[in-house]
Image (tube, rainbow, N blue to C red; front, side, top):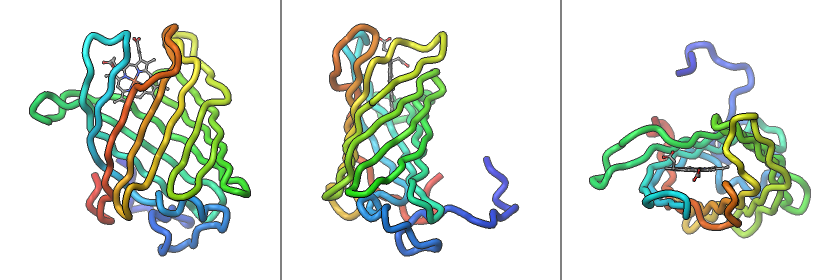
Length: 185
Ligand code: HEM
């Protein structure tokens, strides 16, 4: 992993009460700050079977009006044991006045998403404005995501996908729990 021995002059904060203080435009999303872990299930009509997976999601900030976003997932077998690495993505959520959000998210499968939406009442709803594909990526036309706080330390994630010729429909849903600082990883 990263070399944490070399301290950054401007490190990211993972909580609303850490330094630096969140930028005022981050107010609608400060409840998301931190690292979340949990399990979910997914499927798509083109897949032989549904699957279960585990996911870790981290939202952090450096005092400016955007979130740094990182998520990674791994598939689970029927006993809940890790099977193999699955989707990863990383990006930036740019907060605008009135809780509007512009997000840029990229995946190692050759997909880059530009999304827009809103964050309010503990929930962020984003949908793609544009999807760019690397030459060998699978066809993805649109995605829609919802990250909703269901309690102070619980987060529900839902992801819809329009891909490989199919209309926008359910791909993933997960229930995540906030991990205590230092517990993740
Ligand atoms: C937690 C995150 C995710 C998980 C666990 C997940 C899991 C899966 C799995 C297990 C498959 C079947 C193929 C395989 O075994 O790899 C799959 C297919 C696929 N996923 Fe996801 N996925 C995730 C996120 C995404 C995202 C963010 C996108 C698009 C932006 C996406 C687009 C697709 C596409 C296009 C396929 C191929 C469908 C086909 O060719 O029939 N997935 N996903």
